[in-house]
Image 1 (cartoon, helix red, strand yellow):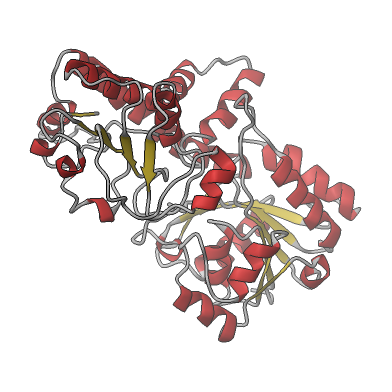
Image 2 (tube, helix red, strand yellow):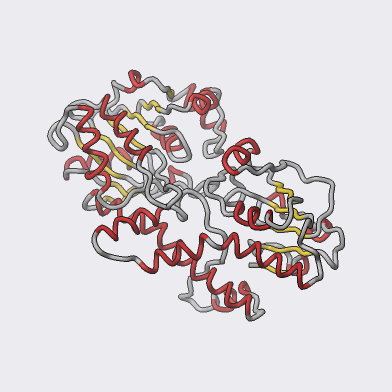
Length: 424
């Protein structure tokens, strides 16, 4: 293996853990234009909590890892990794702006013989059809003649301390057989469980997008079952537990589908499929169903309150959790805000308590004020929206004004049965 010097473009949930890991084996520098993000990293702290302070400080002091917003400082690298977000716009159309800007950055520094590897989730063909032409334009170099490309889709699961980046089996690929071998070798050198080398970049791109699309469809099925069984007054979780006694039943639970992956990635394949004249009905319907679950939960709470004779107008409601998943500060595309906004049509007396979320970010992105400590107050309804560990020991009914009249709704299905009135 030639002397490899790595630059990771984008130091978010994916880029920083990856850069930290590569720094244990190769000279590595991270590039990001967010100065406040760089500042916290250089001080040895990762606000996403994906990299511990101990590991980050070790990378900075012992491994020689550094990060910068100065493009000149990554010119000496020869292995560029792009790990920027691939969001959708308000119409759920893929927004390629971060990816194309990152490609422009790489194009300004890449040299003959260098390799650029993309980690961002994209539709099949995007690397070679959209990103590489930008690199060619700004570098003046020819693809697969002067420089080369690879694709190794990220598999970071925010908040997951078991499947960390070094333990994830990674898919790799390259634009030529030789580059595929080289990319695979670089990644294999730092991964405990090795790699799967795909036969082409398009195959690698497609493999990533169906990972999340499959989960989206499976959860949508469970959400549809929850709607059916709730209407029939049957506990969905009891049904799932019974069905799971069969050896080949795939046990999943209904719930809110937020975050930057499962709730976003399918739209990339949905749009690309339509270019080829294929209407992906299952994926499209799954997205529509899952996107509506926040509103559904809010209306179930209202229904439960009405049954108990509670006036919804101006009722005091407590929502426990606003991040998109438990024990994680990630609030990207969280569907808890949909619960909030639906209930806000009836009452402004809504308190959102989340010890993990950044209140400034929630205020900025969603216009919602939250608290990071449980208020000494009582409520007409309590909604357990996220299963943070801090909520596990809460006696939910004690938070109600009247433990017999008030409503406790469990979105996650984790609270003791006697504590809740309804659950998803």
